[in-house]
Length: 333
Image (cartoon, rainbow, N blue to C red):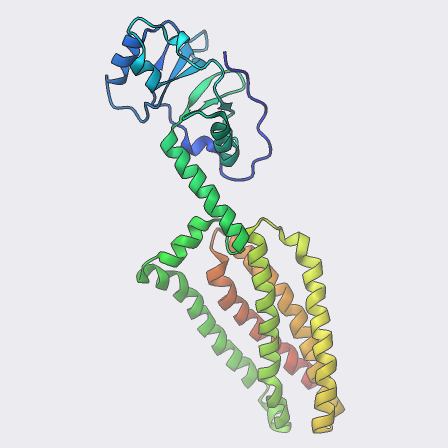
């Protein structure tokens, strides 16, 4: 009888359960090769690469696997040969729920065409046929390449997003862009709310594009790192503090440089301080927003590559404008 498999390790991806089929020929150890050949031709099976040899159901009605017989042995053996003399009494087996990559490589190393899925009590659940192994290995190969490239946790999703037809492309992108259009209208409304401050000192308008752009640029860098991290399984909590401090440090450096440049160019220490503090605040907030949105979109089961950029741009622009004009009003006015 096949040895009870070791407990499945921590799952690293989709399990082998999606590839198992119970629609395979099953015979008893005493069944002859002739009987098994008749069984193979009795109807259409999901796979006939191997025949599962099981003991007759016991009190619980479950079949216990004792070995596998490759169909090539069944076809070549004399009609009276019992299945127990043809079978591999120790085929590769895995427990239900085991990671698909671990299961596939176990079968490959063992040199078998099929992999048996057996519960801890020896109960036979079914076989993973060789054609489905090709799918497992291809999926894992693609995911490994995706991790190396750092773009998505699933290359199947990446390939689908790259090759989908025009209608699906528009469906995935336009809602986010419409949201961005709404955000631009809100941004115009925010700027209009500070009309008095702009009329009092038109120089405040000079720095609106710079503050908004720098916040977007810092956020875009953070988004790229977060999405690439999500693709290789790096949790947000592992990078949150470092990335937030990075945004703060970048804002501080840009603020100091901007303060000196504006103070020298325009001769206004107050205006220079307002712009510098706005850059510091906008860059710091942009890093946090750029981490939170891809994580939230991914948790919602959507592809963060489509929505993170447009949505983060809307939020960052609005926050940057509010911060800039609030500081300008408090310091310059």
